Length: 252
Image (cartoon, rainbow, N blue to C red; front, side):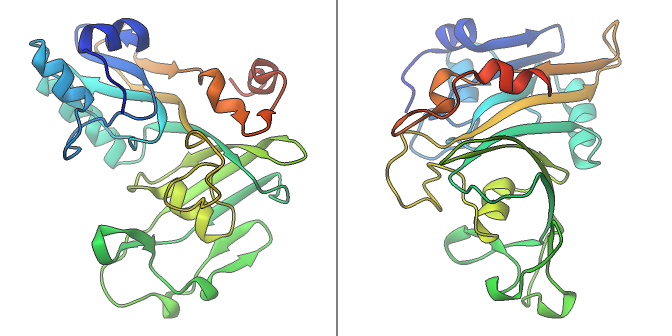
């Protein structure tokens, strides 16, 4: 748990702010909102008289960009962009797999199972890989409600023990990237849900860039990036990559 006040968090993590929005580079270990028994960003801000409306959420264990509206009128417009899948999102991912393709598409519906756990809405053994695309047949879907979900990824770095990806969640389901990668056999390094090695100090998933329409601004397209902390590219045996800036430069 990150122990800090709102003023300190905003000073250290602010990416962008104007009259309508505020964007943070959230550290891993603090929730955006609604986390039972833990203080979250919205609660920290409210304690100092600042009202924030989350436009979207990233998991507590995930670091990186998260966008808030400062007024309800902006909140409604921005959340509609996420619901209509016109907001462009990119995440950085480190896995311990070394055999991922250069690019891929994971088109696997999600469902919610026991104890509110997100899972693929079909038995694991029915997941089919065709080239660099993972799918399940409609006839294999489990009974109950399921949510169409699509993640696209590009491999940007390979080392002896790790692969670094850019993941684009076209849909924005809860735990989507984490579940998709885990169920096709490539869990995110340090993910407490799926990586049982216990050798990583954090979950290596980072909300890296975000682009939305912002008609109230002079430039009506708001494009943001948030660099990960050095711990993102540090594994149990040391640096995952020697020059993270060079790795990311071509994809910024």
